[in-house]
Image (tube, rainbow, N blue to C red; front, side, top):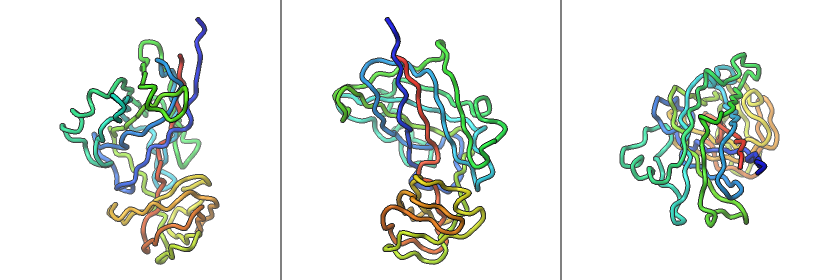
Length: 251
């Protein structure tokens, strides 16, 4: 029988709490994030990840991460592992245990682009051999697309990931204005690209404000697709999804 292959759409977990605060080992990097793939049992054969750096300079690529893959049970999604930037409790991990079906370790130092050719972010890629393959299969009835199934992935940090930007709101921002004046070093166009969804935090990670998707980027001016909420002066703007990845699947 001939194998069939599928490349997932880019999976974009969100870090919408304490997103500008450095992580510690065993902190939840991102909670269960759903994605849809064609029905049937499949093997994860390769994984490519894009990982934002800190202040457009310091990379996060050499750090390790635990990825867990889960399914729904009787139409119920896996229970939350808690808030990002805090370690899951034993009660939370125990509740999630029946839903987990696969695991993969991201060995950052082994699979990152060690030359840091992309400067402000890292690209990590790994080919998963037969002996290390992760097999996944979900409940077909859960997916919203005919012929597809829903899978979840969560990430736990095993290193001091830091997605701070030092790009700050310059003056209190009117919520009716699609353009946000920013200051700080590096500039907005060193940290963000068109299509990024941005959020903002106080310097201690509190008071999160999800802003919207970027339609234009300049050194000191960011333009979004919808009128954002009011933004306090000096809130730090961050990428809502600083970790994104795609999976190559074999059926």
